[in-house]
Amino acid sequence: MREIKAGDITRAVSSLFKQANYELGKDVLTALKRARREEESPSGREVIDTILKNADIASNEGIPLCQDCGTAVVFLEPGQDVHITGGDLYKAVNEGVRRAYAEGYLRRSIVSQPFSERANTGDNTPAVIHTDIVPGDKLKITVLPKGGGAENMAKLGMLLPSDGRQGLVEFVVNAVDEAWSKPCPPVIIGVGIGGTAEKAVSMAKHALLRRVGEPSPDAEIADIEREILGKVNNLGIGPMGYGGRITALAVHAESFPTHITSLPVAVNLQCHSARHRETIL
Amino acid sequence: MVKKVKLPLTEETLAELRAGDNVLLSGILYVARDAAHKRMVEALERGESLPFDIKGQTLYYMGPSPAPPGRPIGSAGPTTSARMDMYTPRLLVAGLKGMIGKGVRSAEVKGAMKKHQAVYLAAIGGAGALISKTIIKSEVIAYQDLGPEAILRLEVKHFPATVINDIHGGDLYVEGKAKYRRKDNG
Image 1 (spheres, each protein chain N blue to C red):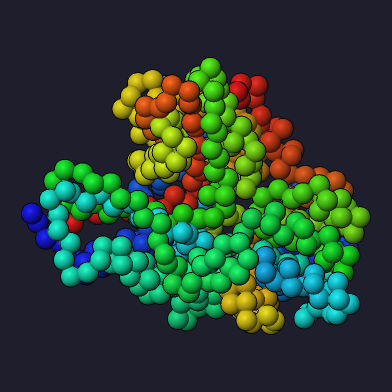
Image 2 (image 1 turned 120 degrees about the vertical axis):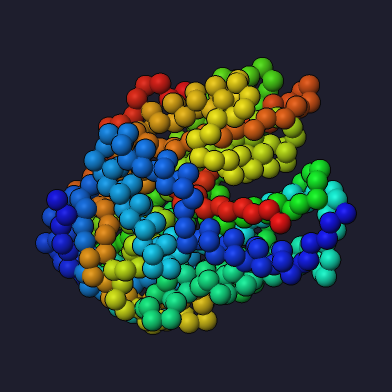
């Protein structure tokens, strides 16, 4: 049994959210530079140049990459041999969010009641926390400040088993086509295939954490990712929807066994400002 | 070629702008998003006047991050315009001439823009740090109680934007997509 202090979790979460909001990951920058070389449309290339320039300004001058500093999504992977001391785990995470958004001049975008009153909670809490218990005595924390524009384009389809691979590919391509210019393309497309409704949606979100463009370790899933990317990049939407070749930087899919009657497919879009950071305590 | 454009927009400028033009805007922009739109349209429906003279002005759909010390504003990129669509035709009747946001507008808004000879421009979503540097001054002018959704008056210099819908029926989102679309897309 290894002890981890709640206060250390708060500090880690706070620091990760600040970093994520000011600095794009190297993998995202590399994918954007590659997209800049491959984009055929002049206005598409200009958009990507502006996105790269924005990333420089954000990190050099300490201005958040985007004014939408996101919903605070947090993935926790505590080892089963970890014991949290000195406080409640989820309270520690939310305190980290509170500090990051206040100290980092990040926009607080969460409303407490979603359907009528919509009053801002004032500190960007509560975080949306996903916990997955794993072997070992460490705690992995991943933060994903998720912007609303792309999140609003998420889709779940409970397809028929007979729809098969072709049906799921079409479902994902249509979701991106319908989202059009709204989710701030070029996007990263998270796909969850199988499980139950909520399992598919959760995999689609989790898939966004993968290094941009790294294929699935499963050969058939990797092939589906390539097929979807090829089709999406023929839609013509292009960077910010001004017309062009690069509508998506990558497709990341995860799969899980499902019921004999089911073929759930979920899509979660990540805007080009793909901000996430992780650490291991 | 980038066109330098002065705000508020004049009739000559409105006639010159074409879908696909990159422009650098300088002058005054008013910032309003969801809650401010709702309140403005409710005021007009009651026969009241708006907290600023909207005739000929340009609205920017944006909700900034907090201004760090020494800066007029924080990150300041556009938000999705579609959420404003249900309020926009009423504001066009009141004299609004330009809008800046991101993403496609409804058929109703496009129709109203054509009728009232107004333009829609997009700024690059996710370029909030870069856009922030073109904002010289920011002040809350109305609906202070709405917090991050209050109406702001911005003074901008060389604010980068792209014309999406011009007054001649041009539509960059539709034309751009058609130009680069290939057959094998599922």
